Length: 345
Image (cartoon, rainbow, N blue to C red; front, side, top):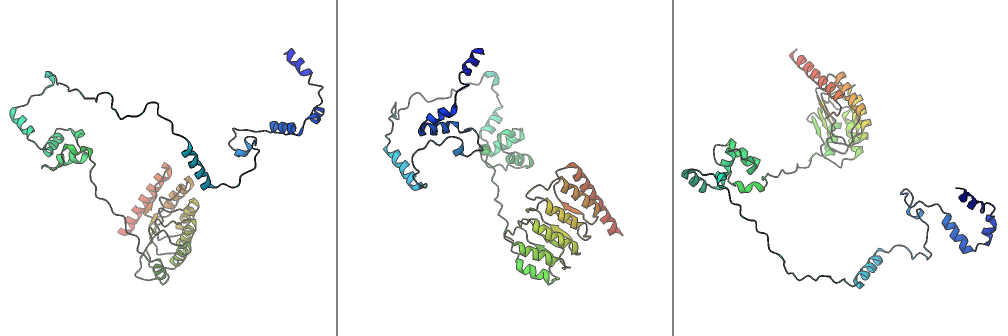
């Protein structure tokens, strides 16, 4: 350690300014590059700041993708292919593997009566499939074949055991037809309080403008004939939820509201739940399957609303917490019991 300190003593009295004056411009530029603080492993820095700029030539201009691809293709064509060390001739070497035949030991051989031997030798694949199902050999067949053979008294497995590797054929289910509802006509009917219009179903209509939905909710405030209002999968967000909340505060005839499968956040759901407290005619509310989970506070609010609103007898939502789920189930059961007692009277 003392020798190291002695080695440093000779650099103590060096005048750095004198040394810098004697350096040439090229040496000063090199020294400046060496003193730059670079961190090549810091991924938060841009690539140009992780290392020194060592390029001296002028830039060639903006990127020309076509010219670059043409250049790479030309370079690939000019490079000669490397000859194989061992040329391929197509000759097959070795012998193909033949699985040896296993002889069944005498103690493992099963002998049946001649009548059974003859019956099994002449049995069809369908009959063998039913026999395997009766004997409990369910691993030799599909579930459909097994249960068909067990539950039916007749031979119904026409495919045989060889169809195990084939999947069961199911009938394709066609897609639901698009919703044929004309929104403009529905809006006119709601505004005119049409007596024949008792249900507004706009499910699965993706391109409804937000102003039109807002006008529809505004018209529902004074409507006295519509009993069911459904906006499932209409890509509705918080603006529509706020409009629905305003509608629930004034409407006194609506009985069923369904706003499932939309983009309503916790703020919009809270607005709807607060409005439900001021509505005494709503009996069914469905708010499940929103784009994001509303949170614990909203679920607790749902349970509180169900406890304070005895008119709601059907509620659609999948709770994630045990506490609100138990409270909601108990509240809905109590509301249904109150409704049953009122009908008896």
